[in-house]
Amino acid sequence: MIDTTVKLPGIHMKNPIMPASGCFGFGKEFSQFYDLSLLGAIIIKASTGERRFGNQTPRVAETSSGMLNAIGLQNPGVDGVITDELPFLYPYKTPIIANVAGSTLEEYSLVAEKLSKSGVDALEINISCPNVKEGGVQFGTDPKLAYEVTKQVKKVSSLPVYIKLSPNVTDIVGLAKAVEKAGADGLSMINTLTGMRIDPHTRKPIIANQTGGLSGPAIKPVAIRMIHQVYQEVDLPIIGMGGIETTDDIVEYLLAGASAVAIGSANFKNPNICKELIHELPETLQKFGFNSVKEAVGGAHH
Amino acid sequence: MLREWMTIVTHQQLAHQTYLLELQGEIAGLVDNPGQFVHLQISEQYFLRRPVSIADVSPIKGTITLLYKVMGEGTEALTKKEAGEKMDVVGPGGKGFPMDEINSKKALLIGGGIGIPPLYYLAKELTAKGIEVESVLGFRSENDLFYLEEFKSLGEVHITTNDGSVGTQGFVTDALPALDTIETYFTCGPTVMLKNVKEKLDGIPGYISIEERMGCGIGACFACVLETPGGCGKGYVKVCSDGPVFRPEEVIL
Image (cartoon, rainbow over all chains, first blue to last red; front, side):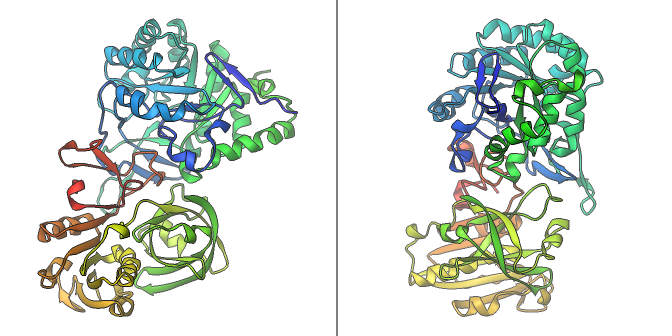
């Protein structure tokens, strides 16, 4: 019997697999494909202080081994999320991680405070969205601001706080150390890489926002490298994400140092992907000689 | 909605860059209304699925018919698939034309290019309900024409082409018939065409079906949203799951 359970601050999981924020809405759409109780956890779409419409369309473009998106944090606002979206998820026996976004320190605090009282199990702080003009990624590229926002959110929230790091930086370890010092309980790695595609017919960027966040298997090696670096320098659990499509990919993330993983844009290709990976994981762990998920975590560093 | 490996029953070229794909599987039995679509995975090489509207359903054969146009590398690769092969399909997606709500004597169908196919299944269902249909179909040129005989078997048809090689030269809005007997209109095509149709047919109850780039195709990713007039409702609609069919007054085009 392979032990797939994972215990992280605030979240006790049957398995290490959860959908990534922004790729699963608030769960409702995927519940027509499988029982959401199967999931290790669910990370819901970002909430901001007020409702946001997001960017103009087109908001997505295909790339080699991936896609660009610039949705722009469209959401009904934190109050709408709490009253209209979260109640659907509560009956499922699956921990919920709420993603928090904002343009200012005050907005991050406000959203985190409201969500921490809503009944979710942990917070993921999005300091790395590349697709909004104000805030978002600037908090994730400057270690001082990353420290500040983590400190603020920790002050107002009784829940464990995971900081979602941006790969669009030169020194990922510096960022990770800054949020560790500020009291973060864990890390989510990585958000999308900023990219662009241009249509040769129109000679213009395909995405209305011009740039978008690159996700999919194209970014997996970047995520693996960053997790491998951070694992050696920082003593925080890591939720790994970026281009996971197979259980072999998951083992690679565990070996690099992730304790759990999130599945992002693969949900768009195959709406059943999380369920299928959960089903296949024990066999894959066994194939590589592991009796549990825990055994594999950080295995590339021994 | 299902994710299913459907079997290709027929795959043939109908017109310039335009193909007919008939797929067999359980999804065919789940289609509620004309105007719904399926999301096709072309191959591992193409990351995103391609939304294609359902042009016909055969309950007896358990098949759906799709007509698609080659728009880029993905749809070009799709043309290479052969009968007998399996295709990874998610569907049926979206809400189609609400057949139960429609009570007219006569309907006008206005389609442009690859917006025409879902109107064929609609025309069949309308005539089956005893509703008379008249169609205005716009194509780029003579070589692009498809499904004329099929539409003619269901009602009167007016053709427009951009170059005037067949029918009226110009756009669908240049060949609209007398509107006095029309009780409802249905239109599908490029957004610029939908805008013009909406303006010209202002005052007549209608349904518009919208094309948009999609991500997940099931309502989770917010790639294909449109704003609603005056921010009514949630302030937006998702084309893939709230649509692709809307009342013209429900969305800002």
